[in-house]
Image (tube, rainbow, N blue to C red; front, side):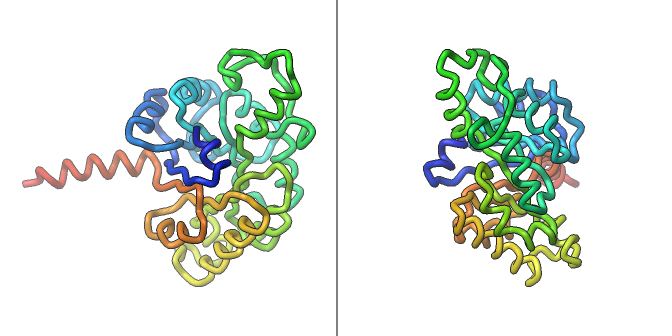
Length: 252
């Protein structure tokens, strides 16, 4: 499983899914060799039901299944975890307080105060069992709380965010970060690169996973700095690229 690989210090590779709703997307991703997919509920049209259907397939075949929720709220974080997510990512985390809220809602006690349901997709319908403390401890190890860092505020507060117990991953969103820093689209420029370096340093210092969702050029530049969670492209672009290859190959 993807989370276990991260816990062992290994890299995992995946992509964002924003359009495809068929649960077979999990099987296709796994067959292609990906370690995980992340469904985008911030910019995509997914419902809880659609996500849970995909999660059931992903969990049954051992594919990591993560979600970017639309915003920081207990309802989104807690429900998406119960719906089967191996990890939840909140966009634009900008402060220690926001990171603490994410950790609190995604983590069982004693780290957080996630509510305990008796059974569901998150247990693969096997139930919690009689040893509740052991179940809670195992769930805290086998799931991820992911803070997406993509604002000037997030960079300014990165040390405090990275120090929050229960936050596992600092994942950079370079496009929105470039906008927030006043250099829209200049993801390879000095301003954004300096900000990325601060996140990489904070992750290393605080024992967090350094991650990024970006294009190949930016990912390849920062993988040597210890990036463990690598997310390239999204389903729309992958499909478009494949279709374009066919169209170009047989163009008259």
